[in-house]
Image (cartoon, rainbow, N blue to C red; front, side, top):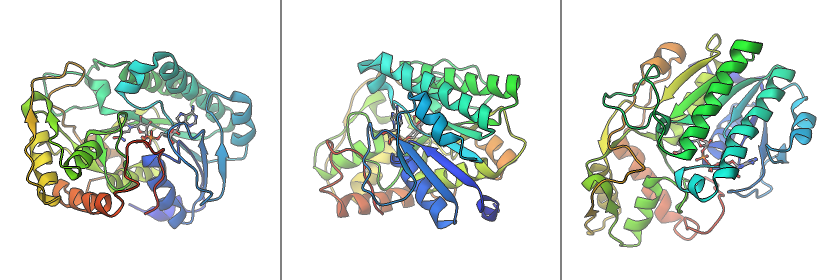
Length: 325
Ligand SMILES: NC(=O)c1ccc[n+]([C@@H]2O[C@H](COP(=O)([O-])OP(=O)(O)OC[C@H]3O[C@@H](n4cnc5c(N)ncnc54)[C@H](O)[C@@H]3O)[C@@H](O)[C@H]2O)c1
């Protein structure tokens, strides 16, 4: 990947104080890119530790226009009302932020000629009989969050078709890595690590046999950059994943081993909100952008657990997101 293509671009990251945005922002700064961050700190924190921060809600159209008319080339749209449990708790806010917020940003991208890379999710596929998940499948979203993400993807496609706005939707598989906080609205991996470090036996649905395609945050950052610099992919939906299937039991066993713990997981039946198996096809991403994952689950997990142990006091349930590698 020719990272130098990123140099000289002016980039805005919505949700840039969250887990993915923090890592992406840091990598882009390293590459010498002019990065702006737009975040209302709904589920994160700003420690006054980087420039060009705009404390803005993506629902605030007027302020968005004031900021986005400053000749940006590229927007990574990561801001979201994130996750299935949160969407059950507040379906209206979920709809507002994930759909109306995305539409507001799309309008600005159309008006000011900005390429948008939108962060969707593997869970839009819902339950499928066939694996790996590929971009041509019909989606059967299960949760409200998934519906909002799929609808947003469709808006991006329409903006591409109707107005030739440059848009790409990327579907992330399960991301993990240093800085991912624990909490009721966060990912399985960080919560499993937290439980094991507290010597609590984690509960595994589908008796631990459910599978996921776990991808390290550093790979996701490289994938996003690849999508950002690749031309002629407007209107596309692209999986960002590894193509490697790992059972949740295997994942938990690694976590237990690297945490030097002796606890045993509790194996329970299915959970109706989640699919049992999920592994994606990474082929379209490879073909269109050249992206291929590099970090294997055991290696990535080992480093993530080292980070969690070192930062145990801040790796806690109640704190809003803030991460300094
Ligand atoms: N982390 C994963 O495993 C994963 C998997 C699939 C998809 N995604 C998607 O990737 C994106 C980034 O995920 P993440 O883990 O960094 O999430 P995150 O929750 O850590 O970050 C989201 C950020 O959006 C901000 N935000 C929320 N509402 C906002 C609003 N109205 N206006 C402005 N900012 C707002 C939050 O304050 C937060 O900083 C999200 O869109 C998420 O849906 C993540």
